[in-house]
Length: 264
Image (cartoon, rainbow, N blue to C red):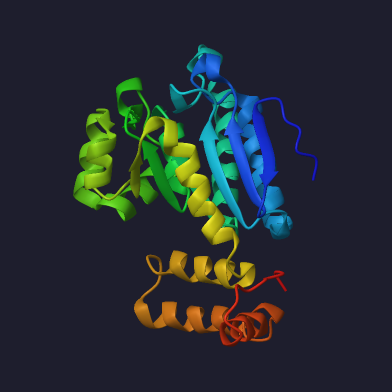
């Protein structure tokens, strides 16, 4: 895969960690049409070629913004048809994030508003700097959240809290986000990326097939009844049994050494 974009920086770090940086710091990494298209391309490629990485960390360039949402300067005066065409790109990249088999960690530095907050919510979990800010202000601008925030936010903090956040459009800080279950860890601003990459490293060193199958099963936990979810889980589990990594994991345990997984 060619990792060259206009609005994203993407690099692979050992052990197969993909660091993705939204790179429009002059606009607090707001998403223009180009960035939306590049996010769609990137996450679609992860579905096609999951071996590209064992874990993904997504963050924003600079220290003031993770992503401030859609670029409203670009949207100023946009026709209904053009708006819907642009939003279709958002819908496609959010669905591509849902389908991404590789674990995704959001490292939220600074502002995560609107679609930026929704990108973080579409990740598997969130680490945030102590000075990060979150909001879904769409109702104050005549629309509503449309990048799966109304689906993902209640799964993190409950329906009643999600309604308060969405219907008021008010911003809140990292401490509240942590207390409400939206953020997994609050980090010092200068340690955020290191902390996220450290956790990514732990995930990336685990058996890739097992990690991907476990992620799929966990995603189903909030979508299916328990019996159906468990049936899905067993199907996912059975795909790990014939893998070389399963044999290596048991062998390494008995030989009292660290396993060397190959993703097959």
